[in-house]
Length: 518
Image 1: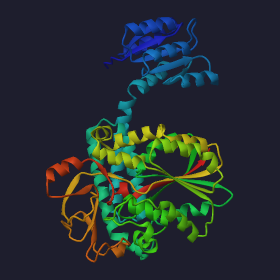
Image 2: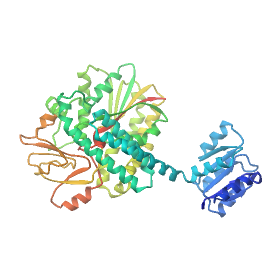
Image 3: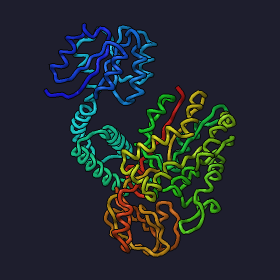
Image 4: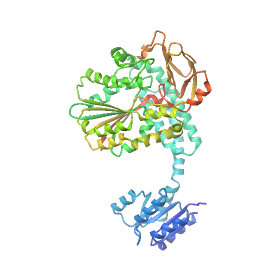
C-alpha cells in the first residue's frame, strides 16, 4: 500500500515507541518524531503534516500547551492526544481544546492505525459505507412505493428519505446521488397523486382517516397543553422544511429533549396566506373569508394577507373556551428579535406565547431574487447549511437557551415547506391571475393537465371563489408554471429556485416538534 500521509509524533519517550513507528512506516506512512512540545512546533514549521500524535505529559511544554500552539498555527490540523492518565478533567480539557481523538497508554499499533484511519480516511470510509447502506435500503423503499400507502406511511417514507438525504450529503459518489434523486423524484410524483386522490375527501369528512392539517393542528396538539398553571411557547418558523429541522435538531438537543418528532400536512395552497391563516384560525380559507371577512384578503386585493393572524388566534381561543392570557410576536428583523428575547421575563408566566420567525421564508425569496444568495444556497445541502448558520447566530437560539432553564413546553413548527423546482409547465392566464409559480387561480387558465392538480370547484376544497368561473391549479412534484411569453428567460431565471404553493413531500409534510427542557 502506498500512503503519503505524514504524521508528527511528539512524545518524550519516543524511542520506546520505535516499534509503533516502524509498524506505521511499513504501511506507507511517513512519521516525523519529536521529543518535546517545542521540538514538535519547530517540526511543524518545517514540514507539511497531516496528523499529529501528541503526548499529554511531556517536560517543558505540556501536551495541552503544545496543542494550543499548534491550533493557533493550524486550526484544522487533526490532533490525537495520548496520555497515561484517565483523569476526567484532562479529557475534558483536551476535548474542550478541540482535540480530534483521545488514546490512553499503553497503546497498541492497531489502535494507532484505527485512529489514523478515523482522522484521515473517515470521509472516504463513511462515504463508501453510506453508499453501501443506501443501496441495501433502495429496494425496500422501492417496494414500499409500489404499495398503496396511507398518510402515516407516507410520513414514514418521507422521514426515511430525509434521513438518507442527510447521510448522503457528504458522499462524493455522483452515481449514488443520481440514484437517490431519481428515487426521491419518483416518491414525489407518487405522493402528489396520493394527495390529489384524497385531498377532497380529507376536507369533506368522507375519508375513514385523515392527517392532522393546518386548520386542526393547534386544537389537537397545543390547546390541550395550555392552562393557567403552565407556560407553552409555540414557535413557528415560516417555510421550514423537515430536513432543515433535522439540520438544527442536534444543536437544540443539547438543551432540550425532543419529546415528539411529528409531521403534519399543510393545506393547499402550501403558501403563507392560506396555510398560516388556517393554522391560527382553526378554519379553512373559505370559512375564514365567510366568518371573518374583515380578516381575509383575496389574491387580487392589496395589502399584507397575514396581518390578522393575532385576531384570528384570539377568536380561535375563544371558540374553544380558552380564555387565557397569551402573547403574539412576529419577528421580521434582528432588532425586534432581540426585543422578543429580552421580553421573555415578561412572558414566562403567560400561558401561551406565539412567536413567528420569517427568516427561512425570506431566505427562500432572496434565493430567487438575489444572485449571491442563489450561490450560497443553490441546493438542498447548502440550503440546510445556511439555515443552520442563521439559527446558530439567531436570537431564536439565544431565547431557546434561556427557556431551557425554565419549566416550559415548546412547540416548533411551520406553515409549509418549499421545493427546488426543475420542470416548467406552460400556462396562460389573464392579467388577474396570481403570480405564484406553484399554484394559479383565475378564470381563464389554459395549460396541459398532466402533472397538475385542477380544482374546478374551489368550494369543494374550501378555497374562496373569486368569481363564478375561477379555478385553482397546483403544480406537482418539482414542476412550476411558466408563461409562454419570454419563456426561456423565465424558465432559466426560476429553475433551481426554492418555491412553495404546490404539492410535494417537502411542501406538504412539515414538522411539528415538541420540546421539553433537559
